[in-house]
Amino acid sequence: MRKRGADVPADAVFTGGAVFTGTGQPLQGRAVVVTGGVITAIVDEAEASAFIDDDTRVVELGGALLSPGFQDAHIHPVGGGVELLQCNLTEAGDADEAVAMIAAYAAANPDEPWILGGGWSMDHFPGGAPVRALLDAVVPDRPVLLASRDHHSAWANTAAMRIAGIDADTPDPEDGRIERESDGHPAGTFHEGAAELFAEVRPSNDPELVYRGLLRAQEELIALGITGWQDALIGSAAGVPDAYAAYLRALDEGALKVHVVGAQWWERSGGLEQVAEMVRRREELRALGHGDRFTLGATKIMVDGVAENQTAAMLTPYRDAHGHDTHNHGLSFVDPAMLAEAVTALDAEGQQVHMHALGDRAVREALDAVAAARAANGPSDARHHLAHLQIVAEAETARFAALDAVANLQMLWATHEDQIDELTLPFLQDGQEARQYPFGDLVRDGARLAAGSDWPVSTADPIAAIHIAVTRVAPGVDAGPLGGAQQCLELATALAAYTSGTAYVNHRDHDTGYIREGYLANLVVLEPDPFTVPAEEIHRTTVASTWIEGEAAYHRDALPSTVPSLTA
Image (cartoon, rainbow, N blue to C red; front, side, top):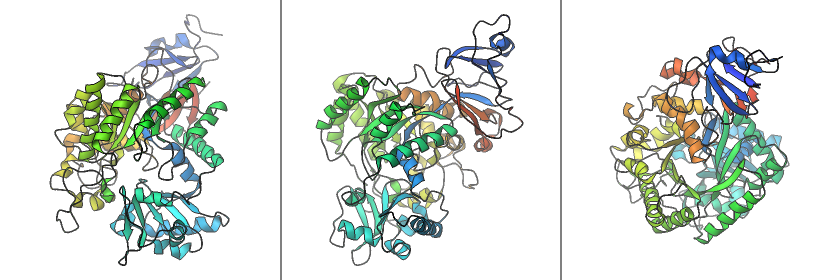
């Protein structure tokens, strides 16, 4: 029987911990009431009993933090899920381990005609480029094609090259580079567009595998507290499977628990005719009547590559191994004039543009494109955003706020580690270490922030990323903060980027991303409360439970004694 004085028959009440509402410092001494999948009240803890009856689930937080569910602004969940089901190298600690894992996978799967998968790290191989001989030694009789962890390079064996007709006479494509042996024969690593030389012979992804990958990814991500995301690649590119059909199947079967914005892939070899097709596809999905669980209101444009293989578009030239300037300024995958036309046309159709912009020249070109759209179309609510932002010139940070462009941060990367210390910083100009991931400058200049992981490029764990956003130092690393302490974020700012900030980018800030009355009860319980531990210990925080529309979608099998078990 409901207790006397109850105003609402609550389904759940969260009490006994601080409440991060999506912005600012956490509330203390408050309880959150959930009914019908929606937050219906935020009250003093002393008043919580009025909302509890015999059917109410009381979640005693025991000092843990209650937060809006995390949302990832840049992720490749289906590719990540599929890789978990294929030859997955993400756990390899070095080159020898990676090769051993490939050999073991090939032995365990003797009937697979191709060995596919990925997750190898560039810093495990000299010059960031693994060679075909390593693969030939363990899989000589079947083609092997494996994406790097950042998906900007591919590693192939001789059998794969032979099937694709790739040899010493194969030229580098305009948008990529082939690592070569002394006689000109491809050595085994194919960067950027060069990986597409295998596109005609690489097996297409089985739809059932793609669907299984989506469901596996959703399970992994919900366990990390993630309740929504922007899929940064709806379409086919670089061997990543097109997830569109998998999402539709998940909707039809009621299996999609999270909310997703799909960013349709912009073919850089195409033109403005893509705009009408993207709008048609967006409206076609809308007409199916699935609501806003899955939408196609964004377009993904790759402006440049990555710094570790020297394809990120830079204002200044890369240096060689001896510190001398080269003629290489990286690659602009889309001509700047065409980019401006494309962004303007998409903006006019109400389509959000999500741009990969990593080097300082790419950031400038992307912002120039947004400026062109603003000049042609006036203000809009498209909420265009630039992702990665590894190197941003000092003159550019203030343009984000001026142009209402969102800075989409991959916080986990803003630290000293082998890939940046060995494959990037030695080849950049003096002073550019200070411009690495300038989060603090963006905040001081008024930029709106969102956050994402780019999983499976790196872990999807928001807590791991937030730890680095706050400290700029990964656990166990002795080096100082990358770019200087002035680029560190306050914890509340980083947490907001991963909740309300991404909700804004996804046009879901009207009902998610905050703990507010009337908002969906998409919540995560974090233990210990990261606001109560030293900054260098934030990474110890883990997800105790994840809630989607008021239902427990995940909770740990064995909760520590400091966080009581969920009770009905």
